[in-house]
Length: 222
Image 1 (cartoon, rainbow, N blue to C red):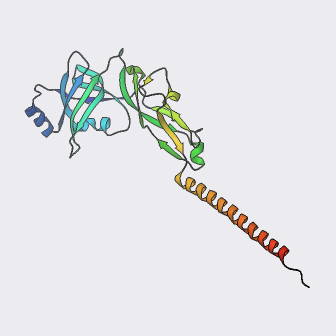
Image 2 (image 1 turned 180 degrees about the vertical axis):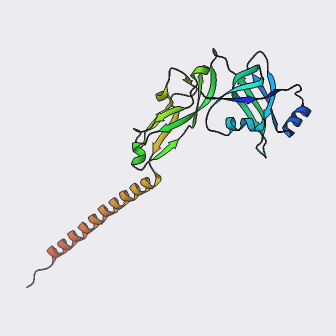
């Protein structure tokens, strides 16, 4: 998986006053968990743009000084309810021999048969949560939908991989091709027209039979 580096500075104080001062200066207070103890640091808000405002998944190298850095993943992030500015970020430290849970984006490739026939592709899951060793974390999970017809679905159980495990039930639907609403309405209209046509033919036949019967019952001329 691709990694980005965030350069930060260790925090000497973690009180409310110092935290507020950091935010006023354009810095984001952060905490790194998972090691021997939590590491408190801060980093410029702009340093998180590539990590937060993207659909891609990244691991992170947190460098708090020239000789101290930690591999990590984003664990939690808090935003201001009005301005959407980043208020706080939590990271979790990575270790080569410990599995980590992470959300991985789903990449759809191919042109579905069902879509060519007028169906609509529905993406039920844009990300899937997996658990794996750091070295086995993929950049994305690719799904080829070329053979997907109308009514077909792709389940998590069809994506099983030896490098990582999915943290979803096997019957979780990742994507599917559904019949377009217009096609459903058109089919229904055709069925109604067919029924009306049959009823019309039956009525015409009944009228003709009545006419023939009345002709047969007419009195003979003297």
